[in-house]
Amino acid sequence: MSDVKDVTLAAEGKKRIEWAERDMPVLRSVREEFARTQIFKDMNFSACLHVTAETANLMRTLKAGGANVLLVASNPLSTQDDVAASLSVDYGIEVHAIRGEDKDTFFKHIEAALAHKPVITMDDGADLITTLHQKYPDQVKEIMGSMEETTTGVIRLRAMEKDGALKLPVVAVNDAKTKNLFDNRYGTGQSTLDGIIRATDSLIAGKVVVVGGYGWCGKGFAMRARGMGAHVIVTEIDSIKALEAVMDGFEVMPMEAAAKKGDIFCTLTGDINVIDKDDFPLMKDGAILCNSGHFDVEINLKALEAMAEKVTKNVRKNVDEFLVKGKRIYVIGEGRLVNLAAAEGHPASVMDMSFATQALASSWVVENRGKLSARVYDIDEAIEKRVADFKLNSMGVSIDTLTEEQKHYLDSWQHGT
Image (cartoon, rainbow, N blue to C red; front, side, top):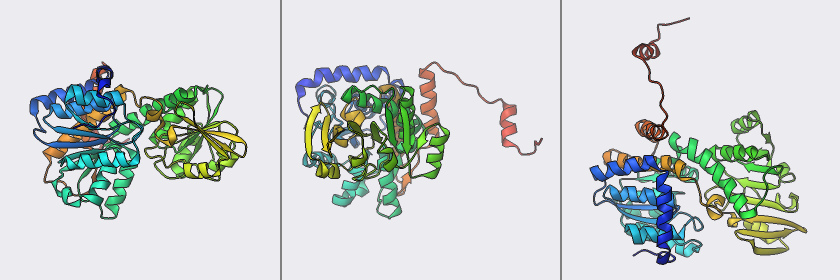
């Protein structure tokens, strides 16, 4: 039995799902293959992902392969309620997700996913897997493997592996080139900026935009902000990434220095308190803060609320105002993922690759069942190439192939100057 906000929203949700599918040809090809092979026949799948139209098409793909799928939200503000309703009503997929659900409901839904007794799991942030290990250790042995979709989740899972706490195989879908080079860079870059503009109606041109973190997500957002005319400052703790940002033409400095200059701040790191209590009093009147990392911990909102003389919720949809030393600081989407809290998340065409990779990684786990140990695996290179070839073909793009002479040259060492 699904737990969604309102089943009468299903008709609108179906339109949204079908619209996204038009721009997901790679996943559609995978779905057609799964429908033929029935590789997941009678297997229980539990997925803890953002409940969006793109995710709905991934769930349809797994179901086409014979899986019994249950979907829960990986973030309280990332659910599209009409999509959740449509998945349940129109596609017969059990969904436990309500936009704005409180913490107790969120974890009740996580437990529903585990009560489904999955043999394959999918995660976006590792909440499903960590709850499994902490509260349902006896179920771990029943699971063939899990897929992890986001940087934050992979960080957590690699930490579990390092500590010897990880008890099942996990595939780091996030680290696939067909995911992070495109989804993280182009998807996060565009959708984060979209969320900021929808929430605040700000003109980006001429603003000072501070980017917390220069991983693939930070690179994408910095590139898009500059493309709209912003002066971009990057903050980093990694010398190599900081150097890369400088070479890419961005100003780099510590957050304490950037706090005095920024008009718009966005964190994209996967770490805690990237914008901290000492930074808030330094900010300009009217500074806008948001986060595009998975968890709502990158901006120290507890400290901000404690020091604020006044807090006004929803001064504009999805925007709260904090008055600090007479200056107004605005926070978008309660510090949660701004691209989903205030916009629609990544465009379908980039999620097409990420979710095709996710689906094919699941089939790889099934094909290798019993052979995988309890560790974090990278995506098989054959999957990467297949997804990239599919995408290029769908775009009408062809590439060169090596001649036998070229292959021989690359395989030999005898040829010199």
